[in-house]
Amino acid sequence: MNYQSTTNESQFQGLMINNGRQEQFFCYDIILQKIHERIQLMTERYSRVMFVRLDIRFPRGYQPQGGNEEVSHLFKMMKENARARKITFHFVWVREQGGSDNPHYHAIVLLDASRASNYIEFLTEVTRVWGHVLGCHAVGLIDRCDVDSFGNYTGNGVILQRPVRRAVGEERSTQEQEFWVRLNWCYEWASYLAKVNQKEDTPYRVRRFGASKIG
Image 1 (tube, rainbow, N blue to C red):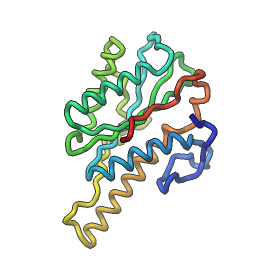
Image 2 (image 1 turned 90 degrees about the vertical axis):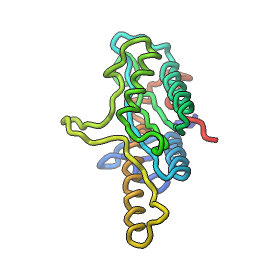
Image 3 (image 1 turned 90 degrees about the horizontal axis):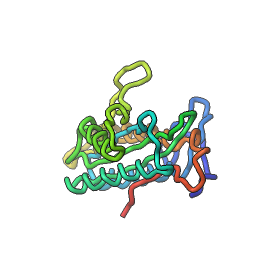
Image 4 (image 1 turned 30 degrees about the vertical axis):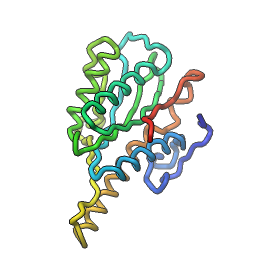
């Protein structure tokens, strides 16, 4: 993996990224690219896509297997569950570890919103599967990322909807603008996953991120 190429520009592939108020944050190009590819694929393939952010943690005292086996197992199971329900599912996750004993993970998920449009139901299912993977009660280990540091509701499960076919003129222009505003907002939010900080100490030969296959 190429972890040498980073950027602190305000945009990547024409979309806004979170580089800090003074452009002090650097992001890995390769992770930004993985996110961009999956958002582009889903929004081109489906007229309505649900974008979800989540954080994943281990319970206190849990001893991970050392690599990313647990989180890989989680997304494998979620992918299989989605396939069984005929829901297209793409994701990117990243591994980070600050001063804690165990790593934690940040992730984004993209779903065909014609079949799945309730992010709380989706994250409830993620919690259930994470508990199955770890063999424990996992309530509280999946952060819904829908409140700020002051406890104010900020939302999640953003629906990215392209203009409807019948829309013309000013109505179509308004719908296109709304789509691009939401797309930029989601990509900027997702770009947090690509930040260099807390990834530099990842153990040798352990991946810093994972993503769904395209194709």
